[in-house]
Length: 313
Length: 104
Image 1 (cartoon, rainbow over the protein chains, first blue to last red):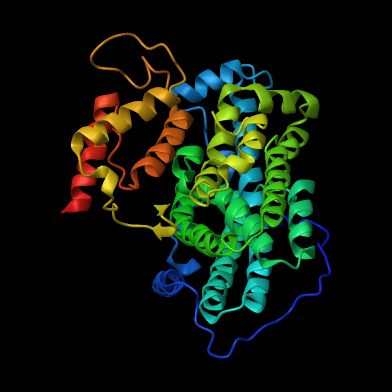
Image 2 (cartoon, rainbow over the protein chains, first blue to last red; image 1 turned 90 degrees about the vertical axis):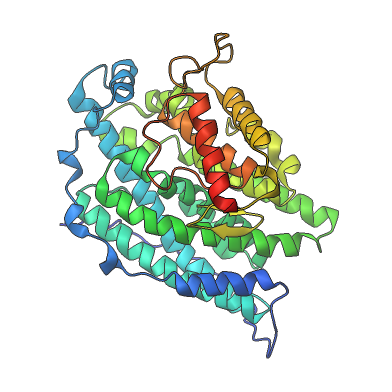
């Protein structure tokens, strides 16, 4: 029986739905993004699903580096069965969280299509809604094939709740397009190296192209928006980025993995905080976020928070 | 793929002002790889091995890939041709080749 998490996230917000008759976009880059999005559509049927196999059948301890990590990890202590269980749950946890992020993105980009002021932006947002629907479909199907899945974390629910309660579209861009999509891009872009699962690699190769466009949509839109902000408004955005990144960073201490494995959560968290590879993984996951913030000129405002969280070297 | 100057790019290397000069490319690659290396006091030798001398593993290399992409505006490792890369000079050669392809 495929896993489906219980519950529902419900938030209310009063937003302004807008239709600007004949309102062109402020920048030709948006029209270019829409053209690329239209040309790059694909479907779940394009994936070779015969590559799929249950995660229980994967032996993760293949490379020398994996075996070295297996020997040094306190919860596996050189035991291949325990190491495989850990890697399996870590993979299922990461992809589950990506799925919930995609579900949030579907709803939030639908709101962007409703509330953005110009037609070019609305069209890009609408094409992204379609992308997100496809991503929800393929990741859900992948988890069903893999036989392992996890519930959404409290942190993703809190961040999505904050975004869905906010009426300012640039906050949606910051939280969704930059932070959630930036992290998702790192996972899917490097899925072949991170997981060694041919079906997941095939899915992620396609999803990564979409995610790169989505991050680009966020960067272009925010680049235009940030020019109009007062110092106080800019500081408010920087504070929100700091808060959202702290939430997402906390999420990547992998509580759900430790609970599933029967490892005391405090021990698992300590490992996730201190192990060299886990620290590197978190830095990697946020690398596209830091790149986007640099391009937007926001990096100096938020850099101390990234340093405190260990997300930059 | 990556995002360059706010534009998402997917399939082809990007021509960028920064990547026209081979010497500049090699210097950038070397600087990024040494700066991000897990081993910060590598041996003084002409050919530096990524794993043995600089302590790189797969995760650390991916971090370096993102940093290089940001620095040079290029797309790396999308074609599966990086299996033979083991040294700093191999990475330099690979990036130079990509940059030249991008200018062709």
